[in-house]
Length: 446
Image (cartoon, rainbow, N blue to C red; front, side):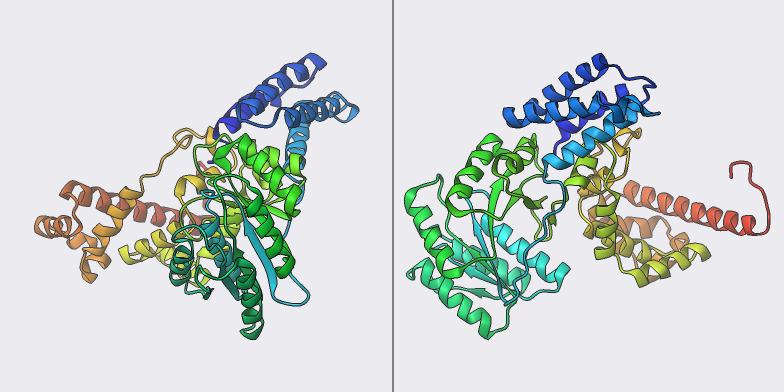
C-alpha cells in the first residue's frame, strides 16, 4: 500500500491517544511531535508539515476536543479532517465540455509514465463513464513514443490518431480535433512530449499546443517515487501552463508518499487520479477522504464496494449464493469466483481497504503470492468436467495426472482438495445454522 511507513507511524501514535478519557495540552504536544516526525520522514514538504501541525494543534486543544466525552477519539477525528483537507478536501471530478469533445492534454517529464497513463485514463473513461475516447500521439521526439501509444490502442481496442513524427505537434493536435468531431468522440487525450528536465523549447511547444487545442483539462503526470522533485516539477509546470489536475503514478510502489501530501498544498492543483500498478485498469479517481482513512488504518470500504460492483457479476453472485446454500458448489464455481476477485486487483490491496486490517493477526504486511493462485487455477483446469463436480472420485492415478498437467505436485493437489472439502463443510454448517435459527433453535455461540 502507498504511504506504508507513514501509515504505520501515524496509527501507532493515534493508538496511544485513542482511549484517553482526558487529553492534556502536553499529550497533544507529544502526539504532534510524533506526527511531525512521521510526515517529515515520509518526505512531506517542510512548510506543509509546519502548517498542518499548527492547524491540528490549535483544534486539538480547543473547546471541541477538551469538552468532548471522548477527547481521544476527537483528536483522531481532527487529524483525519485536516489530513483530508491537506490532500484537497473533496474529490475533484474530471471536466465534461458542453460542446464535445472534452480535450485533455497530458504533460510531464520523460519516465513518469505519461503515455501509459494516457491509455489507462482513456480506458477508465470508457469503462466507468461510458465515453468514446480518442488517443492522440503528439510526442514526436521520443523514439517509439508513437509506437507505444499505438500498441496501447491495440491492447485496449481504442482508436489512436497519429500523423507520424515528421508533422508538428501543433498540427497533429489541430487535425486530431477535426477528426474527433467527425467521428463523434466525446473525449480527446493528447499525449505530448516530455523531456528529462524542464526546458524552454518544451514549454514553448506545450503552450502552442494548448493555444490550438484549448484543453478543458491539463493533467500533469508525476512519478510519486521522485519525492520532493515531483513537487518542484508540478510547481514549474503549473506556473507555465496553469494545470487543472495531477495524476500520480507508482503510488503502489515502495514510496514514502510525501509528494501526494505536498503537491496539493504547494501548487493548489488537485490530485485527480492515482496509478496503482502496471495493468491497464490500475488507475482510480483520487478521493482525499478515503486516502486519509487508509493512512489512519480506518479502511476504505467505499472503494472496495465500487471495485466489487465494477468487477463482480451480480447475477452470477446470486447464483453462487444459491449454490452455497444448497452445498452444490463445484470447482468450476470456485474458479469463476477466483477470476472475479482477481479482476478487483491485488489481494493485499483489497485486504488493506478493510478497516483495522493492519491490526488483524496474520493480515498485517500480508503478501499474497499470485503464483500460488495461478497454481490453484492450473490444478482446477487440469481436472475433467466430472472431477470438478465430484472431487470424491479422485484416486491416486487421477491426482498424478492432474499434478503433471498443471505443473504442480501431488501434495499441492491434495492440499487444494482438502481446502475445498473444508470450505464445502463450512458452507453446509452455515446453511444448517441459518435454517436452525429460523426454526427457533439456539446455538451457544449465536
